[in-house]
Structures are given as C-alpha cells and as structure tokens.
Image (cartoon, rainbow, N blue to C red; front, side):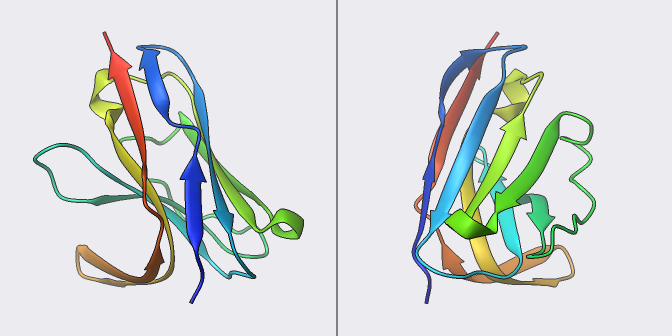
Length: 119
C-alpha cells in the first residue's frame, strides 16, 4: 500500500493556472488524477505511466491540463491552465486503478485537494 498526499489546490479566478502535486510514499507505476465536483460522480482526468506514457485526457480538460511525473521524487503533477468554474472540484490522485466500463476502482487514494474557480 502506498500513501498519497496531494497539495497545490486553492481558490483562483477563471483563466488562472494551478499546479497540483501528489507525493507518494514509495515507488508507483501508473498514476491517475480524478476529480469530484459537488453533487457529481468522481471522474477521470488524466493518467501517466511510470515511463511517462500519457493516456488520453478527459475531453473536459484536453488542451488545458498536463500531467507529468518525477520518479526520483515519487511525485506526479497536474498543471491546470485556463481554469473555469466547471473545474471546481476536489482533486484526487490514485494508483493501482482499473477501469470497468465507465467506473474506476483504485487501490490507493490520496485525501484530495480542493480547487475552487470563481468567475
């Protein structure tokens, strides 16, 4: 089991940028970012393999968000640009994930970091 700790969330204005970080307590393989807005289901945002391969981003963030990682520091990042109010959510990193249809199950989750975008 790996402990995951997210950071970097906050309150920003529409159009601003934020960079989220997720520090893992040990070596990880593919890392994932998810988000959950109030009253909505948790949704996949992005994923990156240990070698840096990136799966397609969620359509809602494509072209604005970039996932990256630093294996030496066991850390994964999510650079979020051109934020809009629809990006307001709790953002979670996870590992050991498996997709079944439209749902995901993951072995390890972080506690989440809140991103709030004001108009």
